[in-house]
Amino acid sequence: MNQILTYSVYGAAILTMLIGIFAILTKKNLIKIVIGMSIMDSGFNLLLIALGYIKGGTAPIFSPAVEGKDVIMVDPVPQALVLTAIVIGFGVTAVALSLVIRLYRKHNTIKIDEIKTLRW
Amino acid sequence: MVANPILYIALPLFTAFLVPLLAKLWKPLVRIIPGLVLAYLAVMSVVLMQQVGPDKPIITMIAGWKAPWGINLVFTSFSGFIASLISILAFFIWLYSFKFKKVEFDDAQKYFILFMLLTAGSIGVVLTGDIFNMFVFVEITSLSAYALTAFYKGRDGAEAAFKFLLIGSFSSIMLLLGITILYAYTGTLNMAQLAMLMPQVPMHAKIVSFLLFFVALGIEAEMFPLNGWAPDAYSQAPGPIAASFAGILAKAGIYALIRVSYTIFDLGNDGGFELLLVMGLITMVVSELVAMRQENLRRMLAYSSMGQMGLIMIAFGLGTKEGIYAGLFIMFNHAVIKSLLFLASAYLVYYTSRKKISDLDGFGKLLPLTSLLFGLGAFAIVGLPPFSGFWSKLSLLIATADNHMEFVLATILAVSVIEIIYYFRVLGRLYFRKANTEIKVRKPTWNSVVTMISLAIVIIAVGLHPDLITGLLHNAANTLADKAGYIQKIIPDLFSQTLN
Image (cartoon, rainbow over all chains, first blue to last red; front, side, top):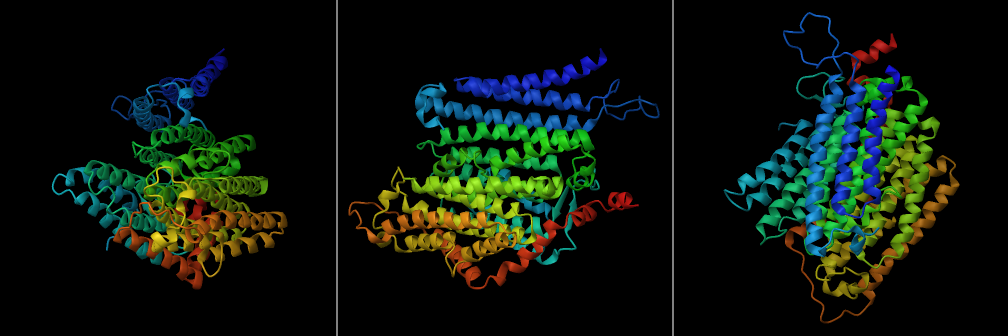
């Protein structure tokens, strides 16, 4: 049972990423594509946090409450990575949305198939 | 003079955010300060390249944490060579764009901020010794590249930038997944320690993670079929930025690809190099064939640039020291020559909004100097003596012949003929057609003339005396091939533990 729970966390994270990728590949609306990118990032962040989790671990902070005691801490590195990844994802989303605004002002539509210059 | 690799990243980043404040005092500072900083970095590169040797890399700790725990910057003969190339080229591109947007102050300010960020990010990718830090720098570079692609409101910049961003976000997620897999199996992010622990990683995880890295960095390095963003981005971005995409952004991408496949994974005997070779071959052939059919001058140069990246991948895919040497030589030549071509072409198509090759009739008379420099660049890039492009192509051909890869050798020669055809088609229009009398031309400013002539002098000087840089290239090639040395220099304690 515990095994299933552990793997279901990874499964959920990967499923979230796949939902994001599905949105990017199939949606016609530029805003929805940007939302898809954001979902993909979140799925990845979940995966990374899940990898760094140790069963029964506490927050990796050395405070007087835990000092000298035998406590298990979760891996702090993935958390630091996710924090960075969130900030970068925020930056990318902001740039993407500002580009969508530019595209809308120029073409008066946010449907990707109505903007001819956006085709590969 | 304070010479420390950390300044390569700190100074441009600091300048990028300081420039808007300084502009409140005196507006021309927006142009002057980035140039002073880049000049300082260029001089620093020369100083550091003299200090560094194959056996003594310059390693800088950041925030006082030693190598496997903290982030470190590694300035070796190899990474230092690429970093110096990028910083010196960035100085030339600054000189060229010194008078860019003389009237529109806001645009100039944005341009110089983003350009400094692009430079800082690219040099960061090259110098960092930490794989996650590399990801962060790749993202800094990409974000500023998206914004620079969308710089002109009148062109289709936003469309090109959106495509670039879409494919870039896939690249970043794959890079992160590759890093995560490596971290899950080794528990470290330091490149040297990763390289040391790599034999412990099971083969399937190694292959999946390598492919993720390969695809993610292949997008940055313009590998076919992941380079759909490149022609649009090159043709919509401002002229000097197209030059820096070829000379700075793509160089950082290919550096990361090489560092990952040579130092970290070391899959040479398991097909890693063959993959690089085959992808390089496909990239080169497809790009050059497409380049021949282009009507737009900028797009033609962009496809030619991808073809050159394919050539670099072939050279590194050989896996021998001669191959690495040839690859580095082509990287140097591509950075210098392609920049000259992009910078010259910016004036050739200045007033024609569609930037077509057929609009170039008779420019040899209208813009004699620019056309001459463009012609010189075209001669050099196809590899005619006595220009520097000849030596790099020759060294690649020798390296392939030494490896007994006659098919690769024949393909490279055949593709060179295609290259000659489409470059000479442009030159034919420039010199052997009558000019349209009503055409408007833009005379180049003095600073861009100085830049283009300096790049041309570099091409001719290296062409006549290849010894000028072959020493540096041999050192760089030896350093890259010496993987154990890299690990030992960065984490000496851990390395000696494993030996005992």
